Image (cartoon, rainbow over all chains, first blue to last red; front, top):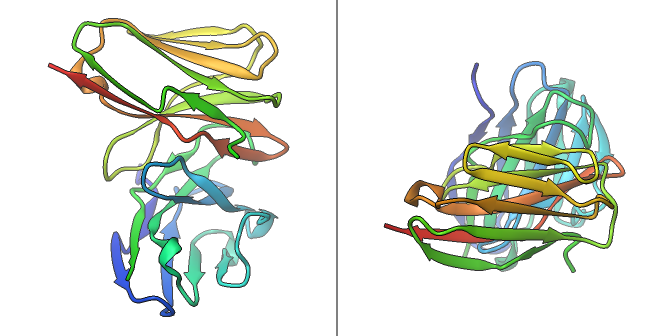
Length: 115
Length: 109
């Protein structure tokens, strides 16, 4: 069974530029999460989807971050414009269970460096 | 402030030693999970605990969920270099899965 796929693995941009990350969850998983993990910290939830609907985006900085999950499968996370403090690993996770239960399966993450 | 507080933040021990790491909160969780994360990879689930007072064992790892479902501990017996990594606890509450900051464990041969 294929795992959660994320791309790109690494991205370096200058501040005020934009960037987009893509996530393909495990087939059949209804719940999808985006987490931000700053170096030395635990993952911080940005947004979670149940199928193609947003369940929680309370911690998403909506002035610069946006995410969508069209057709309830793939998801993209966009940052525009990027700030220095956005440097982090962006982790996508999926789960076959309803939000808040069950195992989360993580991708390898997309490491963003903002200069 | 973190919803889940993990301690210690860093731990460096010799191979063969025992250790315990903690995950504490003032909130009650419907379930709590422990993950291990290695550099350059995403976290991988070790265990899920659901019932207050529950104890689960996974080879040399013993996980305990507090009676009030607010805290948890992870005990490793006879640690090995392969146990090195970032240990994260995650609590499920109100349809959210929130993570602590983790304990970074280094086991020296």
